[in-house]
Length: 112
Length: 111
Image 1 (cartoon, chains in turn green, orange):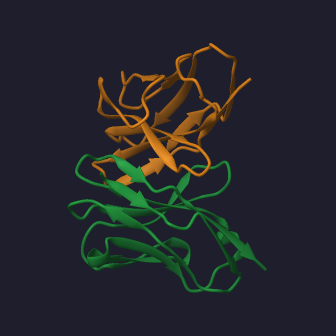
Image 2: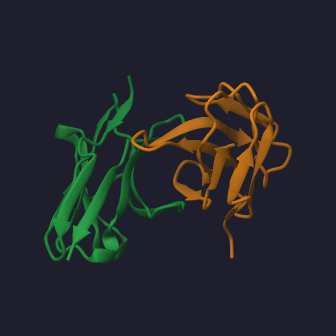
């Protein structure tokens, strides 16, 4: 079955530390890949997306993600986390059906 | 500015009552979507529509209904058949699957 997996439900980091949020997908072909961020009670904001080409994608707010075909992964990274990055992060994919399928999310907590 | 407007922001439903959530977009996007969000379950697709007057069921369509009479509008009705409707509902639109825009959501609570 087609699926998106975010294995970490909750991650806690100190402000200024590096961050990596994991995302794996299960599809026969390479889908379009997205990372979204959600603050409590709000909608989703797009951080970055990958369709093709360079496998290292730069996004907003200093985030980047790397697509690794061999691992079916699209992990999100940030070299130095700020307290304002505390939120929930969702990985999502689109295959040829044009439906956006989400992972279950990773909640990020940042300590000062 | 272009975007998606969801209303109301908060909605309360009595047992056995139907309620309708509004979603309007002025982005000229062809496709529109409704998602339900529950803690720890991410976002699950309820219904989607790729063109006017046509829509398809998503993964959790039971107890919900939609219409797509205009390109700009995709209202979601939560019927009395939906036994656990308390959740956060998000509407989205897209242009050919490349760019998705989300509304700010409606929180529905059964009282």
